[in-house]
Length: 183
Ligand code: 5GP
Image (cartoon, rainbow, N blue to C red; front, side):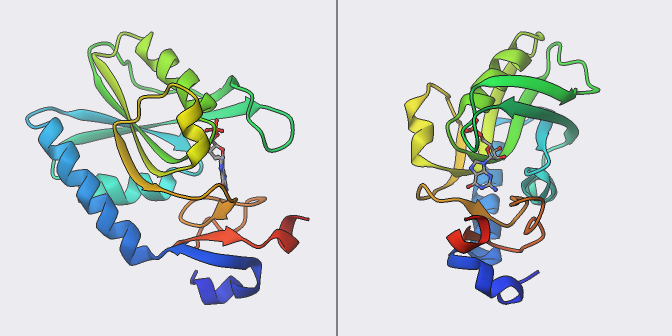
């Protein structure tokens, strides 16, 4: 889906497909340097991270494995609280593994900070985070994010895996959702 297919629902285009792909290639080159000679376990957080995972995994020249988790974060309205429930757990044993969590976006960082602790407690040799997008709020909690694609403004964005009420995930780029859609 292109921006033009849902033009009336978007207030600003933030990132085109080309910009995203260029950035993913840059992140992949750094990951290849940092994990040279290693086999990395990429852990994607469903469902938003599906597109980032698909593109990052194919861009990497390292041998990788992929696994998925689904979590739900309890919160009032759109704010996450940091209280997390696992809806789908990993199938992989993390003992001694080098894990790279692949995320679409970090907002408050609460979900990810919980996930980091949870995966580290399973005996992984290392657990790092790679996110395509990060909002300024993320700076307020202590989450050490090794790879960040873009810092974006504090607006509700959709596309490239990110939804609003399950829509817009298949948009090729990332855009700010127009307020009239959710107000
Ligand atoms: P937090 O970092 O606040 O714990 O939560 C991050 C999660 O909130 C993301 O994985 C994503 O599902 C959702 N989220 C945060 N900001 C946005 C946004 O701008 N658009 C969409 N579609 N989801 C968002």
